[in-house]
Length: 67
Image (tube, rainbow, N blue to C red; front, side, top):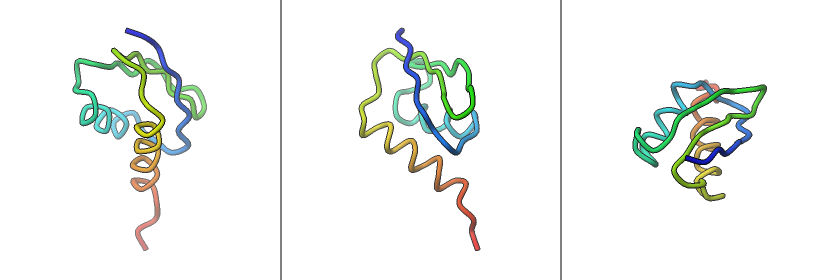
């Protein structure tokens, strides 16, 4: 597995886990740690820019106010 660091401003470990499960399957990655807004993730392959953008959008939508 390789390590990739991704900046995500909004987020919880559980929400990111759900998104990555859907994209990659639960056996194909491991969330290592979060430092500030940087997530360190071990993956079987690098995420594409499009996938990272999709993750950021889903994470942000989850935290937007509903009113």
